[in-house]
Length: 220
Ligand SMILES: O=C(CO)[C@H](O)[C@H](O)COP(=O)(O)O
Ligand SMILES: [Fe+2]
Image 1 (cartoon, rainbow, N blue to C red):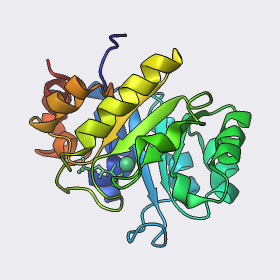
Image 2: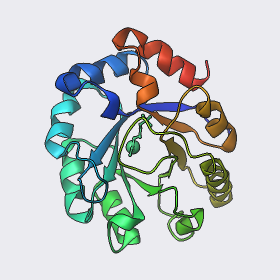
Image 3: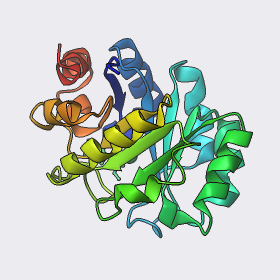
């Protein structure tokens, strides 16, 4: 199935002192979703933002908020992120004891559910989750920081996930996150990714460059 390529800029690379304006700027620049990286200094070695900030950003865009949770334990925060305005909540299987239950919990909140595969986590992890997820995220860097280099062997995992999605016959988005730029984006797309997360490559050059950056990442 050929789908339009969606761009989900990671606001991790935005100017945190002007986050509302930055969200409006990428919205006006033509992004499709807004990727919000939530880090706790425990599951990953960095600390970013919580539900209060997601809620404060919500009036700045009507585009889907794609919330990537890198926190552990994760289950106790799902309701707060849904109430704050998340449209998609994506979780790591390593962030709680029962990933199947976590996915069901997200869906019960009326939010789309995503599962993330770290670079060392095999696609096989999805065998018994694929019937329930709306999104699969392949991490092409180890989670925790923006600006890292794309890990090449994750292309193979994107291909494997694309095959699993096709076989499932379900409407599941395949997202890639980490080190996406004008060199890696076309290769991730060729492997089967249809949602590109890009922090550094979206925000480089400042607001006047965002529209061109997004258009070029999309391949146009
Ligand atoms: O989840 C993430 C890191 O854990 C970020 O979304 C990701 O790293 C995006 O940043 P960049 O495009 O600069 O690599
Ligand atoms: Fe992310």
